[in-house]
Image (cartoon, rainbow, N blue to C red; front, top):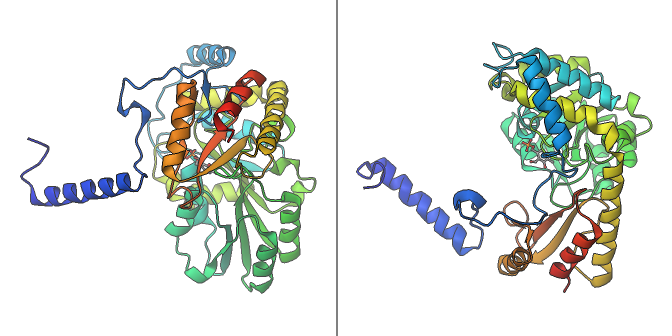
Amino acid sequence: MSQASNNKSFEGFDAYMKEALTQAQGEGNLRSLIYDNLDSPTEFDIDLSHNDYLNLRSFQPLKDAVFKELQDLHLPFGSGGSRLLGGDQKILRQLEQEFVKWLGCYEDALYFPSGYAANEAIGQAIFTNDTEVFSDQLNHASIIDGLRLSHWTRDQKKIFRHNDLNQLSELLAASEATIKCIITESIFSMDGDSPRLPELLELCQIHNAMLILDEAHAIGVYGKNGSGLASELTNIENAPIIGIYPCGKALATQGAFVAGTITLRKYLINRARSFIYTTAPSPWMALALKNVIKLMPDLEERRVHLSKITNFMRSEFKRLGVACLDGDSHIVPVIVGDQTKGEQIVEKAREKGIACRLIRPPTVAPDSCRIRISLHAELNFESCHRIIEVFKP
Ligand SMILES: Cc1ncc(COP(=O)(O)O)c(C=O)c1O
């Protein structure tokens, strides 16, 4: 007998779930996890599906350093509570300070358990009755959910076409709000492109707007010592920027920093529900992240190599007529159209020992299913040729 099969409410909900799953399957949009089947093949010599852009997750010298410190410091693995209750470990504050020192362009930062939680907090925190927010159409789901969660009315939320600074400028010019707030990503997660940041900052200055920039896919990879794209802007010291820095990509760990002023940090501690009502991140994770940050200045060779293979892959794809989206970054999305075609390419890659995954609706628009090729520093030119063989028309 299956679970609670004689309960009418449960039976009704169970039938609803099965129907929804059957429908998703019929549309080719059913999602599943690799290890739903524990016997799934795991041995791929090339993996294009993760965001560990600098291949630090399993970098042995880093792991050794973390293990050693763990033993020396006797850190607990769990924080034991939310940071406002018993969970505020010294290492979490040290980590925030190290992060701010590394970036060099913010007064302070607050460490959240995930990028999702950080963006949720931001959507909630920037709300006032007299605010309008200008959000890129392709912003990450966590940014959208943050804006949905707060008390924003439809009129206060302006969605501009992806990276269209002309439209953004028109919307800003027409706005009479006291607080204008642009929110976008420095490298878009599913499109791999980037807004023109100096121009964006200029728009902020012309229209007295502030900028919230999600650097999830730039931190670690771009900027001096990997400090991201915002820190590259020449006039950043006077720029009205709040930075969101998720750590699960090139920083190979977990959590996210919201960086800005000292006041912003204090305000978030008092108002951000996704910070207040959740258990503080694990001190072990904080220690690992602290070591990753310490290592960042030494990883220039990896960053330069990643940039070389990115340029190579993108120019080869262009030459061969592979339908990849324009951009300069290490996220190279190949548009495959429908799910069936996409699955065929994923299978062809799998047969050649290459792992990649199909990104489907609703993550991306219908008809723009794509294989998101996520390049990383461990790939060499021979691997690039193998990847090209899979994707060339
Ligand atoms: C642009 C962007 N922001 C935020 C997030 C969420 O970060 P996290 O995975 O730490 O919740 C992601 C990815 O997952 C992302 O791509």
